[in-house]
Length: 65
Image: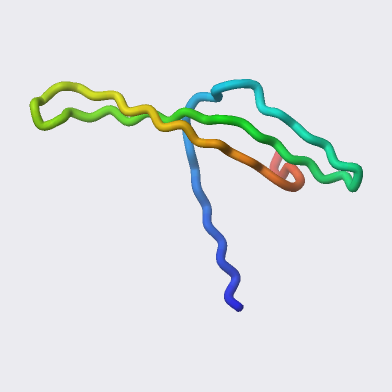
């Protein structure tokens, strides 16, 4: 079986403080909502702001500095 790996970068605003869950085996999980905005002009030339909400769940150890 091939290993599939996807990378996504979402830049937005937190909807609330992340919920952090610590498991007995040392693993952690974080859950939070993130809002991303797109600005564009519609067919009439009016500016439109479209906000999308993403439910994010992160598992595992923290990496990086």
